[in-house]
Length: 103
Image (cartoon, rainbow, N blue to C red; front, side):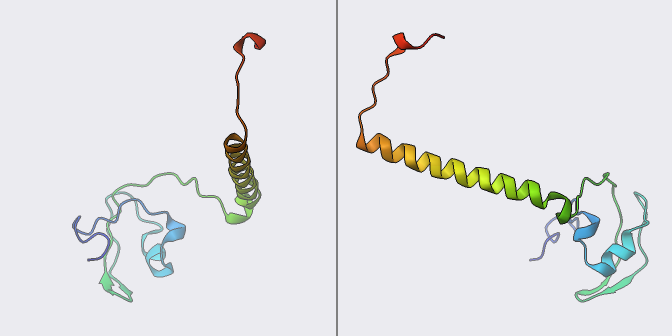
């Protein structure tokens, strides 16, 4: 089965940039409740009804690449740190003395 078969063709929320070009063209200017003209698609001829429009929060990759890079570096750092700490815990006995902490 294909996505949407079990739900009567409802594909859920899909961002316009994630649609194939011919589908995006067919729905780009439709308002909620409107139906597209029939259009050719590799899987056949389709019509699409737009149920709702949600304002896009999509950002181009070029705008988020640095943030993604930093997040991945942080993730790897934390993973490595956890590995080092776990290794140390297996090699040494840890004693906690609460009287030395002022909370």
